[in-house]
Image 1 (cartoon, rainbow, N blue to C red):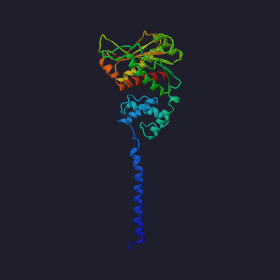
Image 2: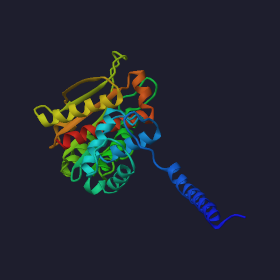
Image 3: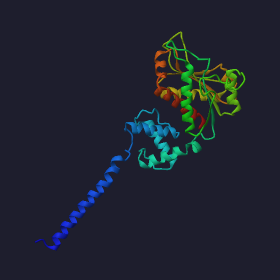
Image 4: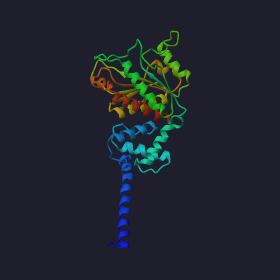
Length: 301
């Protein structure tokens, strides 16, 4: 016969085991679905998602490559400081929640709020721009890039206006004929833009091995020179293309706009490797990240 004290001891042990099992059943699913802590050296889709979120919030993490390196660490710490949370360089639940809330208000509180940017995708309509030996048209690449830049700038609060939103010549949709170059400059001037950025792809048939990024600016304008140089170097940094130089550009859109204006030439239509890269969406995205980074860096100095 088992005494009362022994019975109570066995019952207590049973209750304890049941309680532990119950807690395990509740907590294990939470643990298994919890977001991982991301820190220096982490890799994978979670890191790529973090990099995209930081970029959209206005903090440049470098290439969206799924590798938590020094650039991502710097961007994360910058965001944590701006969000008023512990600056430890580790992305956990608190940082993830802050990023979600930050992105929800970026259009009204982003660092480019109040800035108007006019993006000018080169060529369009009956004007294809430079043609590659393999049948590619410059106008298609420039529109794709500018559309992506628009997205990245708008997520930082900027007001973005494009000189064309499709495959047509600016001014052709105004109801009367207007020279396309006049129309491009007029769009920027009439909207009192803070800056004007024209996107093009270079060409050099004399030497198809030439590759790289170039910037052009309005003669006599230090601000235009700074804008062009900043954008070109940022694009070189995000794409891996060689930064060639920044020069005075004898272009109508640079010389007939009233605000700082730059023209960036991304790669060469005459270089097979450049064209092959421009055909790929991930590369166009890196170009757009570089351009938007350069614009943001210039506007927030």
